[in-house]
Length: 443
Image 1 (cartoon, rainbow, N blue to C red):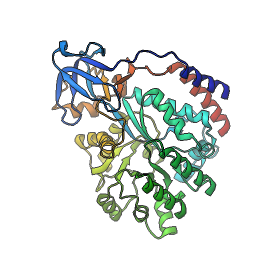
Image 2: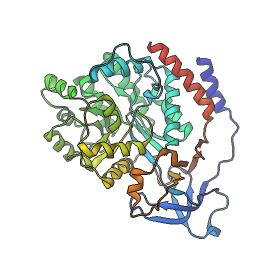
Image 3: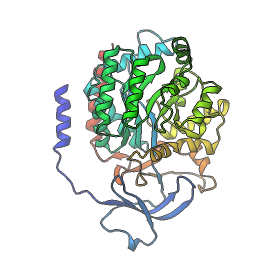
Image 4: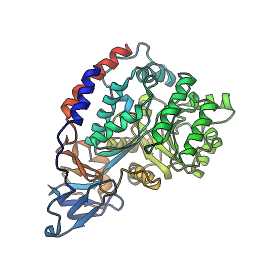
């Protein structure tokens, strides 16, 4: 198995170099401003590079002739999407056998499913998971993902494996390793070391699983590490009520209060996942802090842990998938529909949460989500779409299946729904093989 994986990587490295164009010209595009919903019929010139931008040129004669040209007549062009909270490690879970014991609560879901899976991961499986996730993100229109990774028996080098896989596909990333005491203090130290080694060379966050699996010693070290590298933490917060019960019984305070005491909420880079079971005081602390919240509706439904309520949270709330899938349009629509009975959400606020991840990345100067990240939609609507009714189409009409082309950092990574940067067939054969290995190991 390992020999095949080395061959896969070797073939990638030894491919002959091709001439890389300096940018892309989207002719006859109907560009939608992602903030104002203004529609502009124009030619969009897209410059390549992490600092590249876009510009509108009305006269085709003024467009650069050496740029790769795509005719977008009848298509919609807008800013690409981004995932606010993902789990690469779950990518090979689809279709796996049911756990030997049927979980009866959230802790058992973790123990019998996800902690069983992440312990079984090795480096080849991590690579396969990352490649599968990056391709799925790209084909669903996302050119950036914030990921929260765990592989307790393959910690060292795991973040670089994920980063390299994402970069092969052409998807930007902000990674972290899930530091936890649940597998013993030696594993917690390995998680801290992996985090620091990765932070020395790349943008990243300091990952923590959740308050109920992180003791004071590891929490303190994680807070110090985040301060040392001027970054934030990425942690699950009150996803289930047990997180609060554990914090109160062991620390005499609630989860958000505990994080505040460690100074983790002072950074605008900090991300708190879920925040379902937070009380009024915690909501006020969050509102007064610089930290961000990420909502993961479908995961909450699947785990039956509760419903998100945006009261005192919405101003800095973005959306994620929590590893359920890589389709942010689906996540946004789920947040809207489920929120009708449990949240204060409408067309505008639903779309705002969908786009908040871009504000988070820009505010904190993370690279990889510039203006030259675009999606071209072949949206076969039976009714007119314009700036006045755009949100209605976003909620009730748009699907990942409408994503035709995707541009990341000014480079075409999806053309006509096919990944351009890697061999999809070869990689899917590899991911299937690694998935079978993982399932056998879990059983």
